[in-house]
Length: 140
Image (cartoon, rainbow, N blue to C red; front, side, top):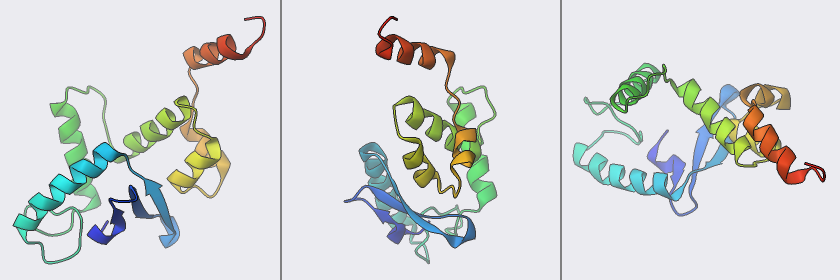
């Protein structure tokens, strides 16, 4: 991502997906605040380009570097699972669905062409099913 891909006022980020297909994805206010702080820090690094996230040599982060950083941070946070960008994406979709987000909205945010692809990311737990049943069934 480039600095210009972030709209801190509108709380969105431009994402370039497969096939160079562009979409806007919302970001939370806490993420926007963290990005603002990072951008101030980034200015001191004097990067040579518009890349948002830079490595120690002030170049663009590679996909492999992002994966390594996420794994390292997960371990530091005491998360025992093997965490990767894909796991975070899956978790993002699962939390949206668990919070009541519409499957089509999740599809749009993930950039899936097919709804069936999005459905693979979402698995409703038995606890969530029981909660829905208790709230909505007249004889629960």
